[in-house]
Image (cartoon, rainbow, N blue to C red):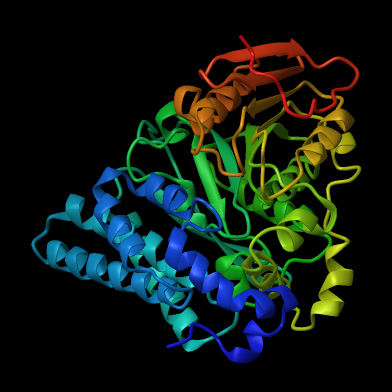
Length: 427
């Protein structure tokens, strides 16, 4: 059964023309043909879910397989969780509910319209995550953030070490086009929670749950959404409102930065897999055509020509100049989703202390070359960097290059940095 109607698949010219190629690429390369979605969805679940993802990868042979295979794995996990819950084995139950929620979110990804199937996966995803929250080993609080007459859903996680009366720092996480909010906090050993830092994760305009609720992304992006989130967080007595930071991922690099510049209370902003280009030119014209079709759904457009005019208003030009807090960017030298020059352009505008951690030979989501295999984990690096900002540790503006042996070579940023095409191997 097709995941969406034929009229939706025909909205984007490149998708329409390359549809037959897409299935053949998936048959040859697998479900990770366009990005490391197995990596970023498996990571928060932990090694216990590896079998689920390996089976999905084996069974997906074409685009329309993606939703059904993820959903089948999710339903199996949900059934197991419910059986364990009846036995009062709540630790095992919560693990299965968590994994089921992540898998249902993955099943939603290839559906770029409002369908019964999309709504069903959304409902099941939310149910399973709420059950996980009920049995979690730390406080997990549901949030509905008022926004333009509707509400944006989110979850606040307090660290396991939290004690009544404490006021802990908090990181707001902002995902990209293709990641649900649920993947933002790991089932075991979360990088922020392990450091005593609370995490607030949410779906903002255009992202999964908000798209279903018809809260679409606009040129204004996340400025107003960020203000609404911060207003809600300031009502939470467990949080230290003077120690707030933002982490953005992929297109969340723009949206997270917009939140960071919307309130002077933000103490630090770190983004990974930067995607700053005007109109997302590389992603929508030189990468998989699925990205453009998905973003049309996220923005509520059905006409490609009108969308092409709208998307030119999505960019980061001038955004760096508004950044007043310490700023970290983590990316790959050979990013295939966005030009590396656009990241340098933004960072050259930033006058606050800044760092660019750049992995040699890596693509958009890292995890494919030796620089990331032997070098620092981007998530641990970001967590430590933000923790240091909460401790008011001083920092210098630097360009930090990770070579193929995983070693970091740092140099002062200076007045301006330009990308040196084809970086030589650093001895």
